Length: 56
Image (cartoon, rainbow, N blue to C red; front, side, top):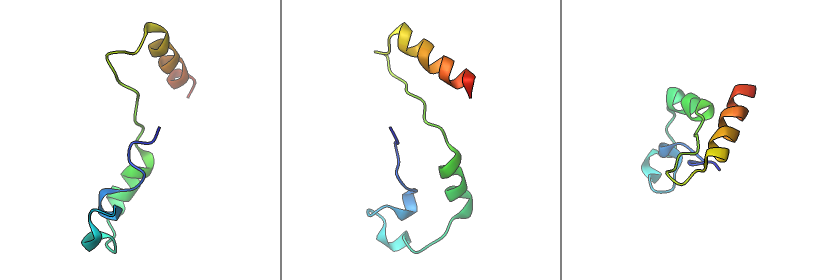
């Protein structure tokens, strides 16, 4: 699941910033990986996530 579909300055909540460009922010946004994190993840789910990351 994607946590943030777009950068903060492009979100509807900040229309005054929508036409601005923040190249570093946009680059980071395209490169960040959000990992699942939760106290309810099972050991099997954690192992699966680790396996997938190790394959990458």
